[in-house]
Amino acid sequence: QSSVCSKIVQLLGQNEVDYRQKQVVIVSQDSFYRVLTSEQKSKALKGQFNFDHPDAFDNELIVKTLKEITEGKTVQIPVYDFVSHSRKEETVTVYPADVVLFEGILAFYSQEVRDLFRMKLFVDTDADTRLSRRVLRDISERGRDLEQILSQYITFVKPAFEEFCLPVSKGSD
Image (cartoon, rainbow, N blue to C red; front, side, top):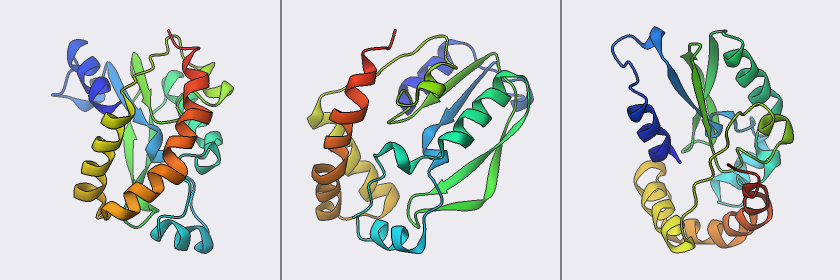
């Protein structure tokens, strides 16, 4: 998803010299994971929390933020730390843009979020590719071990993809 969004930005001739003049901005659903309770955080550190469920995201904040961007407002996007499973103190400033690319595993799940889009693009790869990319990313970027990654994939990721992602993908353009 991130690679496709980056390619779209490149093809649309994004002005990278002055970030205030962005024509295109990418907003990642990953930035909007809910703040976890101490019990949830404990589960997350053991690989036992379902980050692939719609309830893992702060949909109210997603809708508010996307609406503000489309209304021409500058917004502050949370920064999520996947190693500690928490939001960082810092935020990222996102300026108004002509094109807003919202990417994420459940980007289409919420009807309220879907209704904000003029065009919906669903990027799919086969299950083996999804798993291999996740393994490489989670080991190198998130400090996870293979056993935990595979356990999470079988327990949460694959079932969530089939239950929440695939059904709403049919509404994409």
